[in-house]
Length: 288
Image 1 (cartoon, rainbow, N blue to C red):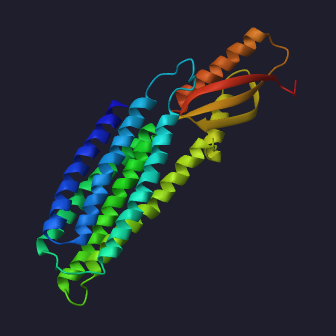
Image 2: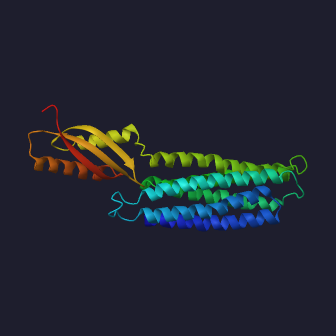
Image 3: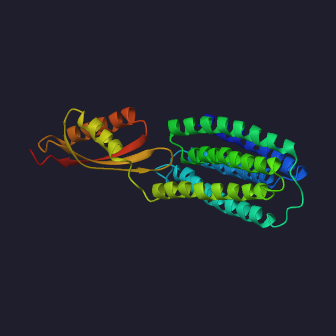
């Protein structure tokens, strides 16, 4: 978790520096695409800040009012981040299209260099964040990695549109402004996927069938288990909590049934790293 927090802080610093560079370059170099991409990077500072807050709050241990922990804060952060990016994307797109009606300056050729720097930096951050998000199962960090991927894509689109204007200033005079419009659309469009994914987690959507089969497989491998009647799981942050209806021999004692249930619980927690805890309900095996 500490590493995830350090990555989020690093993301804020990188996005802040890139945003300042591109906004300054876009304003002084008269490039709408670079300016729009700079504002998009500035939004990333707030986005990474939301991720940081979510990671810190979700790491708090369970308490009397939150027996499942505070992991849902992290999922909620990812959802808020997606909504924020959607609105920011629409605003950037609107500004780019509105300014295309009045083209008074040709962009300076050197404004393309901040975009190249941004693409390289964001590609590196995306790889680091996505790799660590997959390791710890963080929705917020995964959303932040997707946002870096958006930055890389939007930077490339802005670079292409700016290049057209620099190549043919008369014929493609508005291409630079249309690039700003496309940058906004990319941000808004991709953020919808982030919102939908985190909404599913908040609705307790089950993992895929292969993941659920893995829980059943581990449970059935414990001595004394006759069957698994029901198996559910819901995400409560970075990991899942599972509910298991375990079938055991109806003739054994309550103590023995409890010990089997405890072994199943511990075995699943040890062998299925994306499961935080298991609630086991013991039932009599109908075959007995």
